[in-house]
Amino acid sequence: MRSLQRTRHSVQNTLKASVTFDGVGLHSGEPVRMKLIPAPAGHGIVFKRTDIALGNTVVPAIWNLVERSPLCTRLVNAAQVSVSTVEHIMAALAGCGVHNALIELDGPEVPIMDGSSAHFVRGIMQHGVARQTQPITAYRVKKEVSVTNAEGARATLKPMDRLKIEFHIDFADRAIGQQTRSMDMRNGAFARELCECRTFCRRSDVDAMQAAGLALGGVPGENAVVFDGTSVESGGGLRHSDEPVRHKMLDALGDLALAGGPIFGHYIGDRAGHSLTNTLLRALFDTPGAVEQVLCDPIMIARLPGQGLVWDEIPQQRRVA
Image (tube, rainbow, N blue to C red; front, side):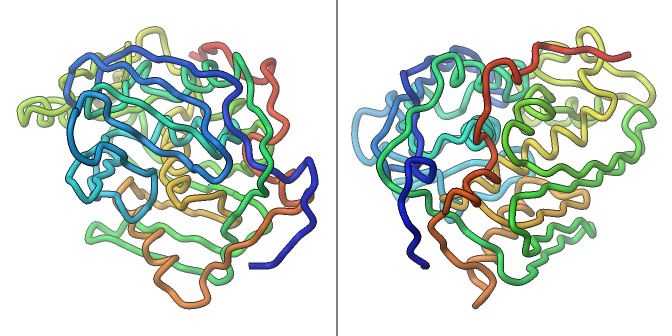
């Protein structure tokens, strides 16, 4: 790790005030309350299950605790205490530049809210973030790492002096079809362009999941967009014409945030999902010379997601035909 001069512009952030969210779990359908609490420098993002009285109820938000699943990102600690569907809150924290927070949950799953990160971003930025005293530790990709799955989906990280996310999806449903988008994640790009984009699925997948006892909290138009051929169930129209691929980018930011610090690299997802992105992080940290840990200087800080974000950049629920 290289040593860099500490300045007031190169320090970690936490929340200025606690904020509480009430909702239901997407898969469990059960009510859940989540509270974001300011935490000291060096704390990182940590979940705590308040509904469990005994044992180790703390679950750090880190890549090697992920129990890989195609449907959501689930963290499991050594005591088998779990927290599911963490990707949207992780994306919101990364997109707002929050490095330290304690997240209390009175259930096993983060509330789905409207299926996006927008409620979390607004809740965080209503009070804003507080600067702390320790420098930001980031991970800089040094050489390309790529992984594929049995279906031919691919996820890749390449060296870059900032975080860039590029994604391609391809669905048989004509209402989705092929979509590709690439975005530099500097400053408020996540809040402006991605945070309001909702989780989506195909009608056939919804029926299969609910038959298996999953997606019990999913309500088309309220917290998910459902596609069926040429039809769209979204409760008032899409928020962007390419909302599906933008949501996949949102998910990717949340899953990459489990690295334990910001990433400087170019992420490319080709039909990738939660499990494959976690496989990529594991490959990144397991490949000698693929990544280095660095202290961020002011130039690097200016390239991080969330740096300089202001309230007016956070969109209301825009609609397009």
